[in-house]
Length: 364
Ligand code: SF4
Image 1 (cartoon, helix red, strand yellow):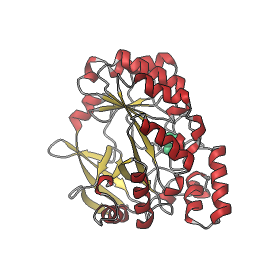
Image 2 (tube, protein in one colour; image 1 turned 90 degrees about the horizontal axis):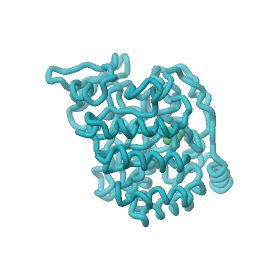
Image 3 (cartoon, helix red, strand yellow; image 1 turned 90 degrees about the vertical axis):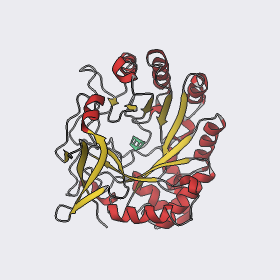
Image 4 (spheres, protein in one colour; image 1 turned 30 degrees about the vertical axis):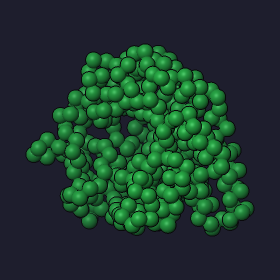
């Protein structure tokens, strides 16, 4: 299992690098400035996390793959890819983290071998050709990450693309040293690497952070960023336009713009899906950002990611503040991908075998 199901104490953790940056901005721009608030609110623990709210989930979805009872750190929802979590440790704790309630672990080498064998097994290799290595922050454990890449190359030659998700360039760029860059250099002829990051506000693009991204780009590693729509941090068009234009300037591709996931402790970060739609519409249909960086606005529902297109929202239940959304995920495919997967209580199967689910909305 990838993690325990109870809510656990997600302690406040702010790296010394981030503390210094937050302090610098406070002195330079003041506590009420947008930049200070954007950083402070992302990392400082808030009393609002404990307030009663309609968000009850402690996981964003259930997708653990039970290879053997003692193996955890692997999830699969989709046909083409597998998610691997070699560690749950991060240099800082983002207060809206999806994995806030996962138990903390770092996988051992034998566990990584089993995961690699699963990725290369007859059943998996027919469909899967890429993995997302996430966590936690995999760049925090370079030796373990290197080992994982090596065993994937050995046991799962079907894996052609390795995506590595990190926020270390924002949390503690000095930890990204030659040990980290070596992993990418050493194996680049065997697999294609991509670096995934998450940038929620332009104030997070510190010079040291940009320098790290630059080094990856010069090594030929493509970088993409997904971000979360966070109330009070980036839920306005001016900030979003600035954010997307900045990431374009430094050569980072956009990926998803997520509505903040309905999990316990996140209510204060969650605006409405409708507001997100309005912002996404203005962001993508106004000519204010390059056509090359238009993000996909998506929900993280109990059945997986659903990008909002016309006809995706089927109905709204105002009393429960929920929306009913249509996916194109087939129930039978889901079971083939992950035999442990169970239909969540919020979901149903339509007459064509596709999954639909209720999704708890946020508030303005
Ligand atoms: S870096 Fe990623 S995994 Fe770590 S706390 Fe932040 S969002 Fe969560």
